[in-house]
Image 1 (cartoon, rainbow, N blue to C red):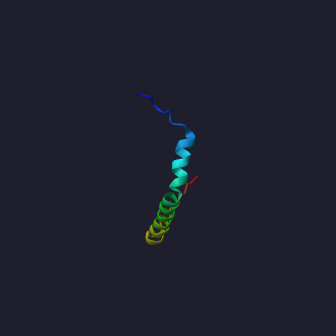
Image 2 (image 1 turned 60 degrees about the vertical axis):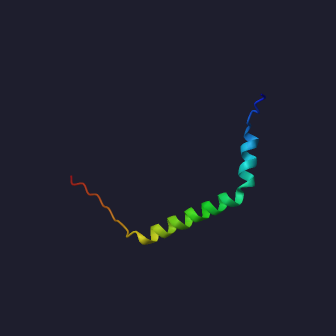
Image 3 (image 1 turned 120 degrees about the vertical axis):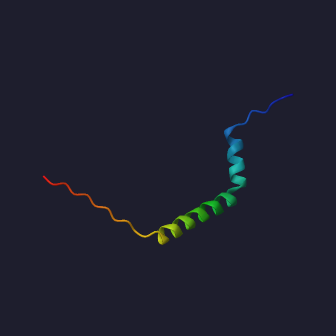
Length: 51
């Protein structure tokens, strides 16, 4: 049985065919991150050193 060697171009073709799925996932993750950042209360930190 002959095995086909997988090359980089094969992976790129798969990614290109699925570009809309990748774009939707990226946008959904960005919107979710923005939403979480709006809900979490801000935390302020400070540091002091005395001589």
